[in-house]
Image 1 (cartoon, rainbow, N blue to C red):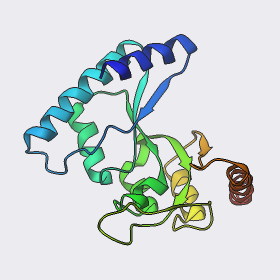
Image 2 (image 1 turned 120 degrees about the vertical axis):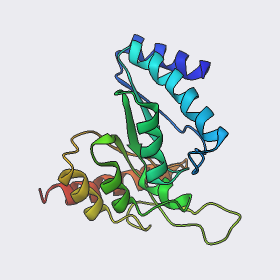
Image 3 (image 1 turned 30 degrees about the horizontal axis):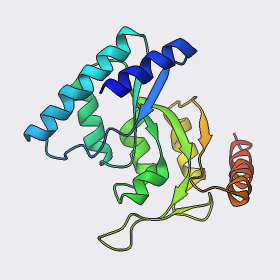
Length: 183
């Protein structure tokens, strides 16, 4: 929690309005002690961010969309948002990203353009892929984001290194431009 607060201080110093993090594995059952403790911890960090006029955004992936929305509602602050990472929802086996947009609606403040596939066994995460080679339906995802008045950034993310990373990022850029040119 202290590291997140220091990150918020740094964001404020830079003039950045949002910080984003994976909160961890938020318990699905809201009646557990672990869930209540998570809400209290998030509230403390988000309150600190609010005092700095900064949004605290959850990156998607490690919990179902409805658990994330419930957590935001239970924390009860107006400076909470979501950074939608559609591939993470698939990699962790938590949701179809297009359906998740309909659950998140106006809470989305950032989007990672990243693709991937669901897990194929019970011991490993799914696999990240180049945009267009995974299961994220980007034309439908963008359409759903626009339907919910999303006007924030589309940030291409590719979690590999070397020349293939650059190649995949440029490919993703071209796919995005093709989709966005239809609007």
